[in-house]
Length: 95
Image (cartoon, rainbow, N blue to C red):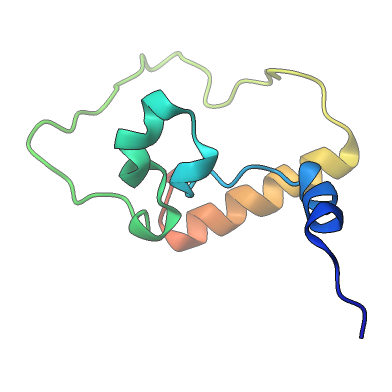
């Protein structure tokens, strides 16, 4: 079994994405707000409240808009749709 020395391990972690739920990976000024980045705490949308509101569109407003924020490849679009489906099923977003 091969073991890595500290230098090899550091080099391997250089390309690693920072974990936004780990306080050490966040900028100093954001660390007091680490709890806001915790994915485990965000399991569903909050219950409806008295200050929730609805946006009522005019009757003649189109039901859908064919608008794109930016161009995506087919692979990116499929990944986005999978993510959206997962979030909808989990109740983390609503249509």
